[in-house]
Amino acid sequence: MKDARYADADERALWHFLRLSAAQLRNKIKEVEEKQAYSPFANRLRMLEALIKEQTPNEDFGSSARQAR
Amino acid sequence: MRILVLQLARLGDIYQTWPVLKALRRTYSGCELHLLTRAKYAAAAPGGGWLDRHWRLDSRDVLAPLVDERPDIGESLERLGRLCDDLRATGFDLIINLSFSPFSSYLTREIALEHSVVRGYTRFDDGYLSIPDDGSAYFYAQAGPGRWNRLHVTDLFAHVAGVELCEEDWSVGRVCEPHVSPTASATVVIHVGASVPTKTLGWGTWLRIARGLAMARDAAVSPRVVLVGSSDDAEIANRIMSDVPENARVTNRVGATDLDGLFRIIAGADLLIGGDSAPVHIASLCGVPVLNISLPTVSFWETGPRSAGSRILPMSSEDAVSPDEIVREAISMLSGQPPVLGVIRVPARDAPYLETSPQPGLFEWRLISALYLGESFPPAPSELFLSGVQRLAEINVLALEQLAQLRLHPDDQTARLILERADEVMEGIARIVPAFVPLLAWFHTERLRMGPVAVGELVAGTEALHGKLADILGLYLSSPDGAVAAGDDFEEYLTGTGGTGHDDIDLG
Image (cartoon, rainbow over all chains, first blue to last red; front, side, top):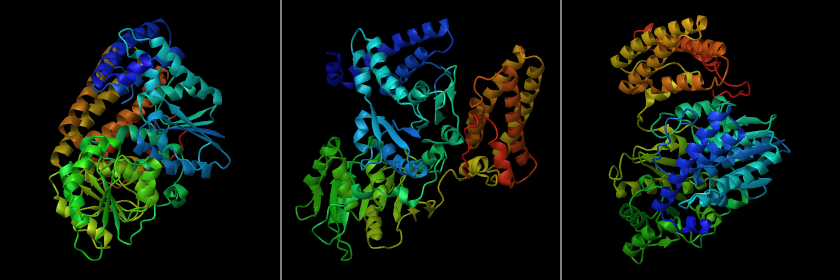
């Protein structure tokens, strides 16, 4: 069902949902990285965050020094 | 040896990677060669047995669970994880990341094994960006729109991959067998679209170009015109076709071919005209000359055509050159005549572009060449630049003093704050005098490459880097006209900072 929604969603709707996810993901990343040193799980969360960012133009993900140019 | 190349950018980048894939095959005889692309652009991967496996990242599939008021992050992570786990389980000896993106940097960290050599962006153990090789460091600091790099991305990819290209690497074999034209007249293919509108001309301009070519009275050429593009460009093509005279030899193939079909059309052409987009790179692979319309949002130095006989027409705007002038330039190419406009010429695939008129950014390019390629540092371009050198030198002295303090007292917060402020001032100087941007980009990139080392090592490394900056600034301070010949020893001295020991790339 969700896969079908991706196909049907127009760009604005897509960005809305992805930004919603990104916000939740950022909280999760903060929680994980505060508890322990950088882990494979943290890396995977960051990977997903980066993938979302590619699909959402002009998204401000904050000035994280963990992001490449 | 098992090699994975990551090319997660768009169609054009994948085509510009083809020569590097061939070079890897040739250099690592008997290797197992894998390529990872986006599923959306999978059709651009080379066939013909070049690859042992072609992997696909389906971004849409990974992100689909998030398209909901209650996004399922766990499901997305699982889908992403399946690809990562499979890649990691394959076990690569060499991972070459030609994607230069945050996402790809996390991916390479995820899939690299302990023994894997990684070239291109990846991550340190603390999650910070790692740039292990000089080629990627150059890309990070100097490449991209708005910067002054003049090295072509295919050559940069080759440097990152650690291979040297030869003519044979550009030969794509059977995929370039042309569709045989039934007539003897020249064929001009016009690509009417692009990935973004700012990279191409409007439909009205393309119409005038197509009509001008098809109706050319020049007995020596009199070409037929073929329009190509994706299905997204269909409306543009239809508008052009509705205004072209019936007796004009213009054929519309927009949206009517797959990529293999597009290859065959371009391979059979005498000339391709287009903006910065995939068909230009296909023409480069097929050896078909290109008249490349280069608008301001792209850097033709980085992504221009490579086929011999091509010409690049830099245009500050769509109105900068008339369609009639573009037609005349195209006809001059078809009839073997010299350029009529101020174009950049492409003499051969492995030769640098030839300017017929000076292009902007020459000082900055010469500064980059001095920093990375052992060329002489260029004379100062202005008094303002020399004044900036003075200010930077003063800030640099201050920074070195703080670093000396930190060497003795690592917890000195005042010294750290002063260093942060020094960075801000340096950035401010670069905003006032943009000619410093390549120098400071080099500096900041080399500092970034140091990674999560112990404080003592970090301070020592930063001191050494500031020392090199002082030496460069000293070249200008000690020479009134700012012209200094620094030679190969200086280049080696400059590139000796940062990296992880995997680097053996000579950009010279």
